[in-house]
Length: 378
Image (cartoon, rainbow, N blue to C red):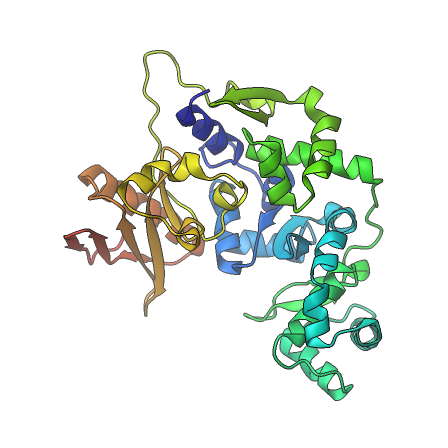
């Protein structure tokens, strides 16, 4: 399998090619989890993969308790399937919590402080309550538990890792916290072996072709535990060898990404949000970034910024800016774009505007010495 074929399969399996519409919950379940530290970006990550969905559709899925936002993997916020939240936290968070012991000592958060915070916040949320972060901080301060600096956020993070809290529906633009057990009652626990196998199968189905090291990075598991998960399900996966590296994927997707003999596969430009699963889901991102690196250096931060994809390869970055009528979108191609690229970018910007329900202005093209003003609406 060539690098180009790997990318075609990843586009297909990540649901970034047309033809596989679904709900936000379908997408999150298929991928296993969707990184959501950048909230607006995570809404677009799901919108890209649900056909003609909107950001309101994703918000409805949260309110309907079909997906939930919490900190299950790598200490980072993700959307996860509601029915999987409990067992994912049980499987993945102990290692992360152990690794942050030094941070807790520095912030003077010991077991006594955490237990007091849990009682205070738990009592305030009991019976279906919800609180914004600022309200939680005021509550802690009134109970003589300082939330100053990073202390308040770290307390919330630890209580979410422990399964007490998760994010609830937004109040206006403010995120809220709820009791996990009340928000998602009766969600099943899984034995460790079953949880490892379920997570591995979802990862390689939604992210393949990928290596076991990619899976370990994405999940936050040790490499040994990642290998256990793969071993449990590899009879249901397809082994792919390329460039002296073994990758795994779902067999049913193998033919879907194929290009008929004599035809050339071309893909529209895709505007990825920051921290999209297409990039953050792999320890090795060279397949998508290799061509760009030959044009100019790509920093680690830039690799996880909003990217423009062509045929699965990063060809530029893009930024969004609010304006008085809607949103302005500005691309920055790594190399001088063709007219076809510019037109494709405008079409991609239009899809983004439709998702937001806002008019989009493609305000400026920047690439090297090239600059083109464009004031029309897409």
